[in-house]
Image 1 (cartoon, rainbow, N blue to C red):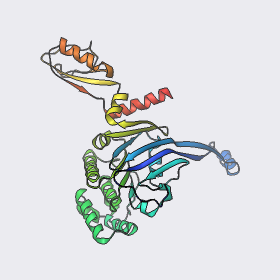
Image 2: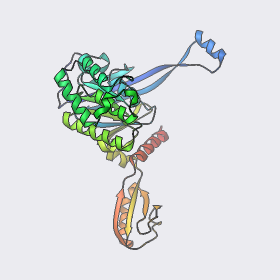
Image 3: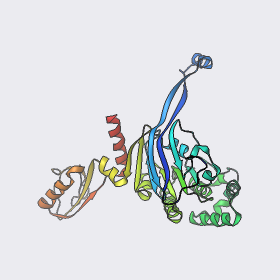
Length: 337
């Protein structure tokens, strides 16, 4: 779609990606003075593929987790979708616009929040940066004041916005960064590690706020995070990218079923018993409530045996932690590459 196309309505896809790829031409030279001099006259480069033939669709109002290890291509993809990078190949449409055309109307409807980047003016209070954002996005004063005050209240910023940004803690600054990025009430949020470095309490507050913003405004959110609690709390759908290629796109629960590989049975017994013949005992600190690990496809059979052969009072089947699932997913990919 061209940059002149109007934004799509709420019942259409917000993001459409087809065959998207990005290759960087990276200078290469050997260490040492001689190599440094030689590179001035005979520069060698290598092509590094950061994103390779990626395609997906995100519907309006969806919150989608975009997962992968460092260097997988997550940030590069978000930068292409927000218009900061031009792809080497493929197409993308966000709200009906081609991102890398950087149409003004497109930029007014999206935001990119990067947990490791500071967009606020370091020596000024956050309120001054908010005013600059108002001018950039040409937000009418009454609308700006309403949105600013609402964000300050929801994010519990209070008097913090009157302090120079350099005097704020990381968590306080991150909340102010998010407020600044949402002043123009964007319809699409690209969030790259928004809770990076925050303590557990602050992470929960940010997650709660993002879920509320999604409900209030039917906003579309594409989220990258190494904190699996972010993904579990916000996302029903996840995409996993590794070495620049999508290796999974589906329900979070389906990802666990596909790559989990094991289940943990927490068994409550009326009297202690040795359960080592049923699976790997991973926790027997409470003899009458041991935990055993079994293969995912063994859950039904092992459960039936336990109920028939042991004095079971209660039994719980637990999915593996999502971070273990992702690690296993990458391992499967590496083994089959």
